[in-house]
Image: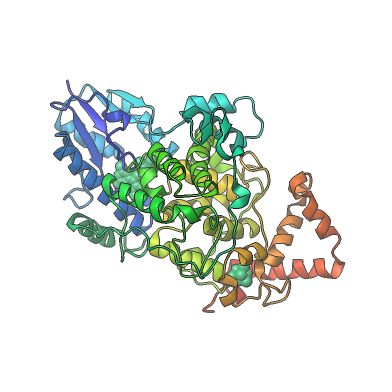
Length: 518
Ligand code: DLZ
Ligand code: SF4
């Protein structure tokens, strides 16, 4: 009897384990667009359009080149489906299968749903390892087993050795494993930023865009100027273009932000990697080759490779080690609601305004906008981690929970109390000012520390430290900052507290100096 082989929306690779050993004459590949996946958080319109278009293109590749039988349920079918489980039910109604084969999904939530199928449908369900990752779950578990705090650096070195990437025998090329300190140049507005990869939407994509506009009108996002790659071939061109044109500057300007320059020297390939259109090793090897060819410097190549071979695999390992518990961690007991400007960009704080505006346009913001501006603000103002996570998960085209949750809860919000990062990534306005030109056009004054027109990051930073002294006071990496605070005059401390209370109360009531239109 044939098998029913499931391919989920972020598993769009012909190498996916659920398609291994397929009997192409008899087995059926099932792919489905379902409401629940698009709405359990209200995904950005461009993200839904990207995934549905990539899914439909992938299905047609499987049918065409591979001659597989693909059953594809669309959301614009006469009877669209709500959940994956309903899709299975429908498929099993039409034909008989001896088993279901699926690759383990990227989210715990979906894994829980799949785990029920065997009993519900009385059929064998094989859940296979997702072999697209470079470190499987059990290998990571073993590596992390006896460590109290996990640090990416040591894991990353193991991965460099395992895959022999940027190695000179058993030593790192260039004599150092990590060139992070050489990756923090302020922006240079005289530099030309190469045009980002542009793919013209075909008929299929245009139809999907219409569908998304019709079915999800109240989701965040702008569907104009859709230019994402939607096939593996196009994604390879995007990678190639990045390697040829931007990689050489990526290292130096990794943390730089320039107003109206959403793409900078970043690669913008996360969305392709995370849905299967690109494989991690092909990205890593292409970058390494560029170094050996003398086309890109080591600090850029190492920095890029670290993100994929190190960080990406590391956070995935943490996610699967720690779920479901990780999703509810809230070290600072932060409980404030997410301000509405995370959705409409209506705030006088220019760095936040620009970052949200670009997010709405592109379903993308680069990592330092996410971490230092959007995440840092949420951390300092004590926004509830589940709300911050839901926002990040919904608005970025590359976001799936396995990668989003550790980055947001662990890295940006320190909600795990230091399991993933050694200290909170909190900062005042000066680092944003150093790394961007946002402050020049802001209503607030970056150099003012207190008062109604002072940059809110400046006083919120100190207020955050003081508010959480009980939890952070013993953290030796933050200790220095407490010493600075303790040396401040009582008058200064009072001003910090007063400004912060006023700002946070305005934030809660969505009025006052926070909003631009009030
Ligand atoms: C994100 C997403 C969306 C919006 N829609 C679908 C869908 O309709 N069908 C599908 O197979 N996958 C979709 N996805 C991706 C899934 O949410 C993804 O497979 C899980 O997040 C990973 O467990
Ligand atoms: Fe952001 Fe403060 Fe700079 Fe304004 S002054 S852009 S709020 S860091």
